[in-house]
Image 1 (cartoon, rainbow, N blue to C red):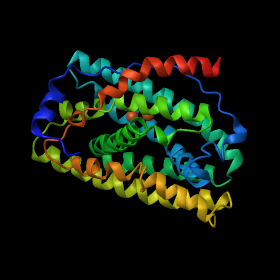
Image 2: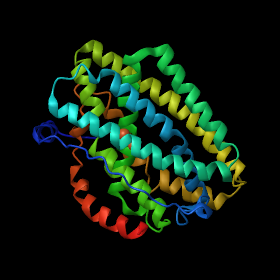
Image 3: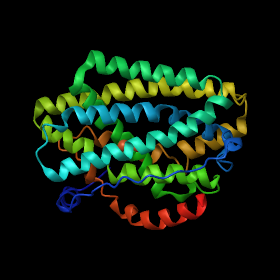
Image 4: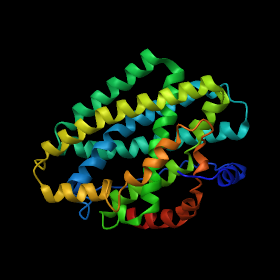
Length: 291
Ligand SMILES: [Fe+2]
Ligand SMILES: [Fe+2]
């Protein structure tokens, strides 16, 4: 994100955003798993469903990575934020597990994809160790923070979608924004900000980008094929519009993605905390939705 030095400084001088663990349920209608986002079409729906397959395992990995450094943190505010971060990610994992259970019954290949993601992350932890696992975590938290920013910035991304599925993704986006700097602040407190820490952080982002997209793209295509939609050109057109076109969930974040490689980067340099003002309104709607 093209932030000026002044706005970056202003963002860092603001009080810390303290995440809150919220135990929400979404009662997702199983019969809508393949077409819950009608305006965006079945291929965009398959893209988000495939992404969901990464979440419970990925979030477990984030929790373990941050937890392994928690004892080195002395700042009580950051310690409190870490506890809330762990609570939020655990709740996200639980709710995405529910979505994934529905998906397993609908798309036979989904279970295999999830097992492959788990095997990969287990190997990362085993062979690359705690520091690179935390580095990968802050990189992937940057990804989820950017996707969350897209969802909160452009209402068209969830407009017209089945309300329970839309609420799940909106809730996730709000909380990813709320805790977007927690893993990063843990990194800075435990590993530091010098050239060695920067090299390790940049390597983590490069590996995370390669591993994530290297699994995500073929998995997504397998899901689309399993649903028999590979030749649906109208659905592909809608997908590209939502991903890279005028709505462009990924397109609008490309610059922000590369911002991570700035040596003095911090997640709150991109100050989007104004979206968090919508949390109470969201919670009231959510309560009505699942009543
Ligand atoms: Fe999450
Ligand atoms: Fe997160």
